[in-house]
Image (cartoon, rainbow, N blue to C red; front, top):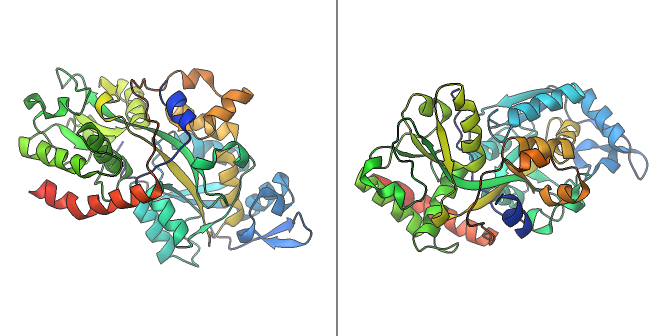
Length: 388
């Protein structure tokens, strides 16, 4: 597989999900809905809930009439998105065009802006919070509340549904045990001479969520804080100076080729690779570093000018249904509705039991202001630190 995963940074969450759970894109233009809840036809682009279509059945009907959904930057092996897309298509008969699966959250935002009013614009986006917050502030996203909206903690969503956390995980260290004699388990381990030229990131932290998260985690492991990400940049500069940092951006393909035997990435990706690589003779080990415990959630959003607005809203309903949330869980990601589903008995307990073990749960999440500040520091200082 040659998928590249430079996704953008994400934040946020309810403490119980972090501590409890993580520790264990057509041709149709804007469509009119059926009778709205208040009577009369309503433009699907302005619908803020299924009730505006006259209920879920009417939403499904409108989405099927559009017949297509444009998604963007969703690798099939990222948080089980391949199975999620296939299941959505099988359930509703709606074709999905997944454009640029190798892209980043910034690419998603750029596509919304550059293709405004065009049929090939993305209908929905899956963004890291730094980017989701920016998109919301710029007026790019549509307010929408899924049927399960009330079950999602207030700390995990915009009150109007402009962006909502969908799944998350921890920064972790993946390692090819057949190529590395002693797999590292902490950030401190990564500085050992035996790992020369082996430690890679999944992307560039100025654009990539996993890489951005990796820098934040490294900061926490080296005297930094949510208000001070610079120690994380300094750590990677030191890793570069020692000769251990590998500038090749880690992907499944680079792992298979032996180019990136140690990869700092999200826990759900590294855990997923453990299964994927078994059939290819690779013994992929995963550790969540205890000295740099850091978790984040990604966000769902609907393009305000989605060319398939009903399908976009049905996609959201599916992702936040028990079926969709359990599919994320099946991909080793912790769904936003984990606690609510555990309480009502709809959680896939077997899948939950397979989540990577976390010694020190991360429970204090950065605010949007802290994320924005960290992003500015990384953008300003990363290239110079690594080139130096």
